[in-house]
Length: 180
Image (cartoon, rainbow, N blue to C red):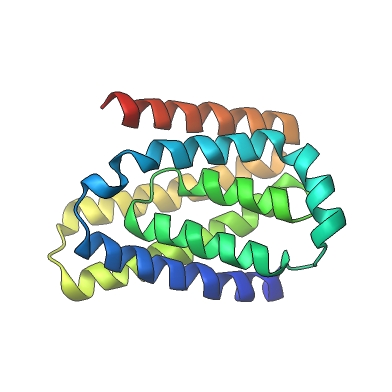
C-alpha cells in the first residue's frame, strides 16, 4: 500500500498540522458538541461500509481512493490533530468506504495514517506549547502497544467481528464524551 499511503499520508499530515494549529487558536467549546457526532458518523460508516462501498467503488473507482478519499483523510487529519479520540474509527470507516479491499488492509492503512497525523500534531505542540512529558510519554507508549495489539488482532478477526468491535468501542467513546 506504499503509493496509496504516500498520497494519503500527505493529506493526513496536512490535516494533522491544520488540526494542531486550530487547537492552539480555537476555544475548546468549538468541538465539544461536534466530536461525539463525528465518532458516531465513523461508527455508521464502518457498519454500512459493505453496502456503500459497492456503490462508491462502482462510481468513484481508483486504486488510491481518489480525490474524495484524500479530502476525507485531510478532514479526519484535522480532527485527529485537534482532538484525536476515535480518530481511528473515522479513518477506518472512511477507508473501508472508499477502498475496495478488505477491512484488514484498511485497518493497516489506518494505523499508518493515524501515526503520521498524531506525529505531525505532536511536533507542532512540542515546538510551540508546554508539554507535560511524563503523561505524553505514557500515552505514546500505550498508543504504540495498543496499535500493535490492535493490528495483530485486526488481521485475525473476520470483517463482521472487526466491525462489531469498532462499533462498540465507537459508541462507548461517543457516549462517554456526551455524558462527561
